[in-house]
Image (tube, rainbow, N blue to C red; front, side):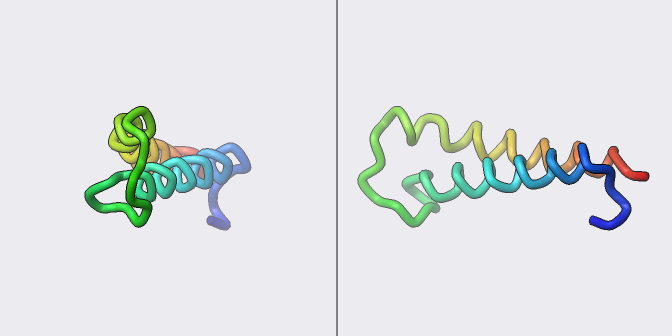
Length: 62
């Protein structure tokens, strides 16, 4: 992360946190059981968005 700009670091950590939140709230692969349907339906898009943000953060290098 030394070679990334501040914007790249922020995007990476934001994507990482969104990915982890989506992973935790997914009922089939996550750690929390008995998740409400509204949260469960957002877990897969959160995982995908998190991965995309992590990949995009590689563009912002010094």
